[in-house]
Length: 238
Image (cartoon, rainbow, N blue to C red; front, side):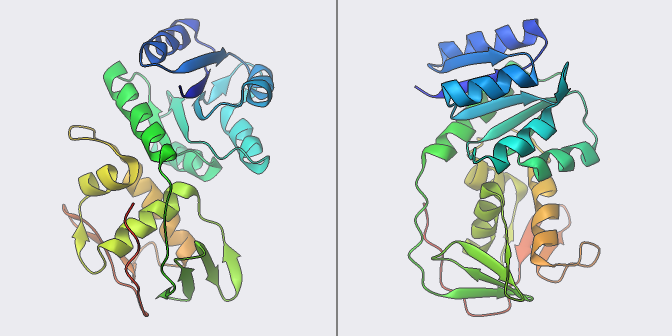
């Protein structure tokens, strides 16, 4: 039974989400404020967080940044009426794994929650000993670390999984739908800009040029293609 914390000050939305998650077999708690959310994270220890941005006593993304810095590493799905790309990017930078714009369909929300919980339950295995060079970034597949000029680069769990997916299909074009299925676990019919927004962050952290990328290439209308520099051992599949 997955423990889910819904942080949403609109009681109608919160109660509707909670009821449907309970019908899916989840153990659900609801918080309507930042203060309540902090208390429930400590006492309830949720495995999944559904988080509204605009809360009566603070900003949901500031709360998320605090939770991440305190060690919360469960998947987080942001719920927001703000649909601009800049707002989504801010959400991912704060530590969100996915972002849903209000109003949203309940079936899509449940599909995203299911995908996040399935993804979180898998154990990633990487026994590869080789390193991958992407520009001046060195990726250690076995240690699951990235460095640039000797300095560590911190990738969010979803960014790491996205990088592994690109490496598995190195030099081939990977469609957004394939990445949604492979990295997020979404089935057919789910449409999201999540891939594109995560790709912006991944390029930035790897030192790729966002205007004229050299390593993670956008293939118009098709998807993305990774062109690594150095020796590559095939990443283990999940």
